[in-house]
Length: 347
Ligand SMILES: Nc1nc2c(ncn2[C@@H]2O[C@H](COP(=O)(O)OP(=O)(O)OP(=O)(O)O)[C@@H](O)[C@H]2O)c(=O)[nH]1
Ligand SMILES: [Zn+2]
Image (cartoon, rainbow, N blue to C red; front, side, top):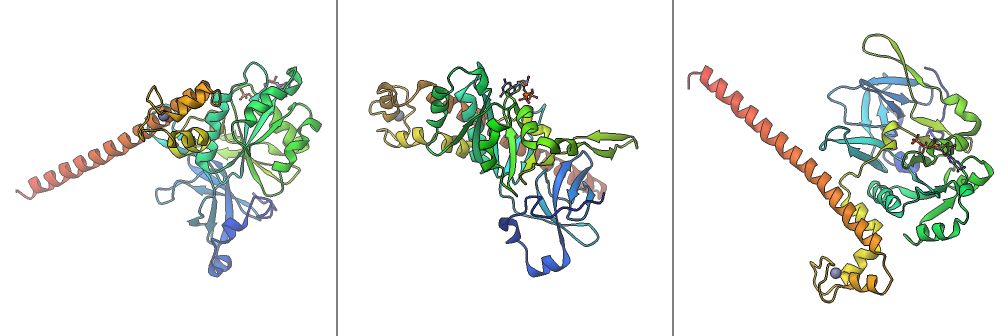
């Protein structure tokens, strides 16, 4: 498919440019993965879009990845990622799946009506921190909320420098404050529970250009034409919206450091506990319990911190167990093969 789009429009930044040598510049071309299908990646280059069949010798890549291709469009190199979101594969507890790469800002959407939940926001914050993406909290349905001020303050209190914006997602003017995060060349992505207003917000941000986001036509294995949703959209502001189905229902991957960063206040308090292995239950000299008793820390926040740590540890364990099991299995296969060979040779 012929298109004409500059690398800058696609979200190219100096971070990626720095990874290229002079020879790379002369001999190779850069592209960004804009869709990931079962058997191929769709790669957007400056002049055209190509299909890159998925083969065993390609690294695992995902939407948003930048890569270098030869003049004949064969894969040369995957560029180092600025950020990466992964999750447990659906249906299993064990496989890690890459969802999206190279996102600059993660819009964490939560509504100001009865669905408002600080704990859910903290969960997404842990994910953003783990993936090294700057979070922006967007509180939707401001028009349905009598007084948003105390709720906004509660969210702001989660982190001192956290960007928090309250909007009516249906109203373009109300979303004007979000332009600051939608600058040209910035890649943004949207997460949040069902019904909080993600699609509404996305439509408002994309404005007229929504029309241009029709699906990519693709031949499936049986040669039928299927239309699959495109994962990358362009905002009138020049920002790139990365929206893949996987972003919609994210589970926590192994993200201990992301959780710890999200709860930096509790981590700092724990440092002051008398015992270095303090569980903050009822140990003497516990700075965390003291902060709760003094009203400086919410029990809800401590509970959620523990819950998210447990949850991510469980997922991390499952992954490790899977790797250990795979290793044991391949060792067994090798032994069986060696045994068969030895039998054939008459040992
Ligand atoms: N009044 C008001 N309604 C909103 C706002 N944002 C979204 N809605 C409404 O809330 C409902 C759900 O919005 P969606 O945008 O579909 O929510 P979503 O997060 O995309 O939901 P899923 O597709 O299930 O993930 C729709 O009826 C929207 O019109 C808002 O800011 N104010
Ligand atoms: Zn303690």
